[in-house]
Amino acid sequence: MTDEKRLPPLLKLALELGPLALFFIGNAYGDRFGFAQDQRIFAATGIFIVATVIALGISYALTRKLPIMPVVSAIVVVVFGGLTLFLQDEIFIKLKPTIVNTLFGLVLLGGLYFRKPLLQIVLDSVFDLDEEGWRKLTLRWALFFFALAAINEIVWRTQTTDFWVSFKVFGIMPLTIAFALAQTPLLLKHEIKKAEEV
Image (cartoon, rainbow, N blue to C red; front, side, top):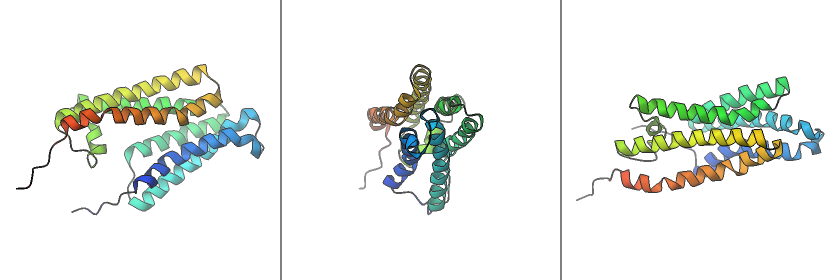
């Protein structure tokens, strides 16, 4: 029997969304801390990097493990955020969601190709689905990640930086929640029922 530590749901949510919220605040109010209008994104990026690393550190300190998806996301934040600051070019931080979502989508599709629905490994403790259910859910999430990557490309290439930051915070999360909730019928249909006690 494993004594696996898990974060309370609200704390887990705070650690996942906290850095993003600070990114938005840094961009929205950076001028109040002496940053020029066109420099706020760089202040926000610095805050985002630090907050992401701290959140990952807190998660590890409390659970003694690092979940794959947040680790990959944090690595890309540090690398592309670092390039943004070092080269003073905001394109790198704007590419981060495209790269992360494309990477997640490719990994999930690759797992399906090799008959290993990797989403099952990530969510196994949350859902108990049959093989077909895991396969369908993995494919849907892979396609959703590709859609998020495409949406990010459209938004950052056609809108202002401020709009992109706001959409990243207030658009992507509701879309993700709505998509996750839309999978409920599939989860219910393919859930493995526990044997009834006699």
